[in-house]
Length: 324
Image 1 (tube, helix red, strand yellow):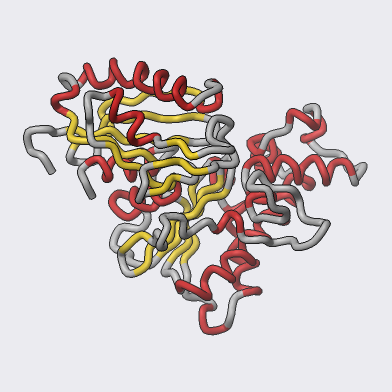
Image 2: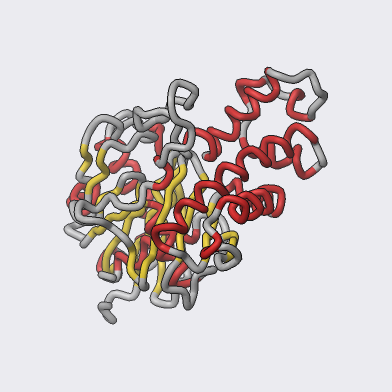
């Protein structure tokens, strides 16, 4: 850590929004702003917009000379190369490799920039500041536009030989022709069912196959979002609760499989879907305990992120800015 440069930049690059935060050595976000991730047709335009968003934030802390580095958490982010590689939910990185760390560094006067998977960044944030403090074996599962995961084993993030270990959102849950298409090009992935977009699709499918009344019918089916399901479920809507039961059952079964390879102390869930609280967490835990091997039963905790909104990913990514 450079004592002469008391701040770092943390970036949470999500499928919908990209949040930029200036973070001090105590882990406090002192300035923050965001842009729409998909509003730019090319990576170059996205980087330019990001730099323009950052300039006033950097000015608030006395200029680039006070910034030690920048860390980015991004879908399909490769820690080893600093690139986003074939990210299915990013229009400007769907079919190519984008050297994003290098691109930002060049636009920010050579500032050191490091990049990792967005869920890995969230895991780093939970370990340093959130629900995983003191833990050395846990899995963070991010439920957003996609389903991401950050796996920590013996206190270290799991990257694998190529930087892409831990893509648990693309474990196949429904095999064969019945599996839903996934943005990764395969079918039946966990992400196709348990992401925010997957939950909205489940809602449309269930509503189309039942005549039961539901608050969800107050909105056109093609405009339904996972937030609508959360609100309706919170009001006791039977169909919305069925959607959460379906989603939680699949997540619990997936976690039961994940336990077999790393025996985590906890599964920590992060993302807007978690705001439903017990409506989603109870089905997950109940399903897990039914499906998991007896040797793992009752050992793992099921927790919601200890950090609000995008802070876990911003703070986690910022740790890369210190060179950690």
